[in-house]
Length: 143
Image 1 (cartoon, rainbow, N blue to C red):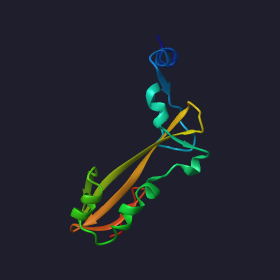
Image 2 (tube, helix red, strand yellow):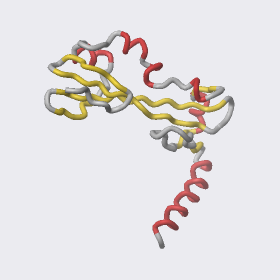
Image 3 (cartoon, one colour):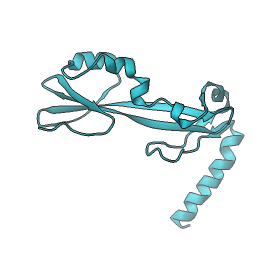
């Protein structure tokens, strides 16, 4: 069987099996590079945020506004880790350490059973144990 046919067969089988197992398939919303389809058990659908438009879905900056306000250039790595204990060390370039904080939001329009998942996050950069900057893109500080 050709790889393309195998992929189509798997998609068709998945579409038939998941609803029978009491799951909804989450669609990918166009425009979000990090969105991905997942299955949600029917019992969890009620807990998904309901919105009128995708503008109501909080991105990293909005969802973490209070924590970000407590951090700024010069904040210590310990302060940062206190605010974002789930941060993951990514790499070191020269004297700069980079950490990533992931952010995921699920939402649906009104009472729709179609659920969207948006994934994103932010990058935090430290030099000599002090925060240099953070960015929603992996933009290393100059110098």
